[in-house]
Image (spheres, rainbow, N blue to C red):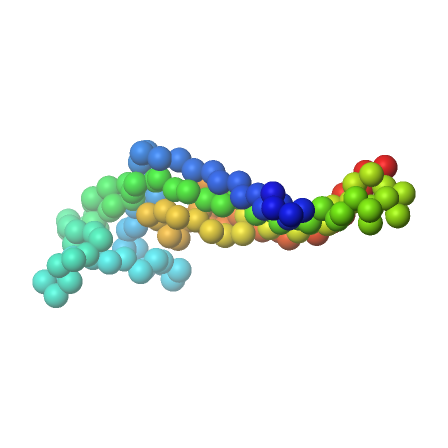
Length: 136
């Protein structure tokens, strides 16, 4: 709080756990993620090169899905202003507050950028709420 202005930020997170993102088999799917595999030209890669066996494809693809699942997410940001008491009193109110809130604004800090580890889907519902709190 500062001179009638209120700012609130709600953080949520998990630390030090492993998450199975499901692996990535190279199966020719049309909506597959780009995978940063090791090659002689790309030695600073995220994944080892695929190890194919005849007729079975890359039998170790599932092990590629284990990632550091730690994350920190901003779930709610609220900004409000408490009008001075003399303005509220003129309206026959004891308090009057105007506010705006962003719910799940999309600020996530994690190691797996393509999935929301909080809800295990690609995105959470986002919302913007504006309102007035009036106390009589």
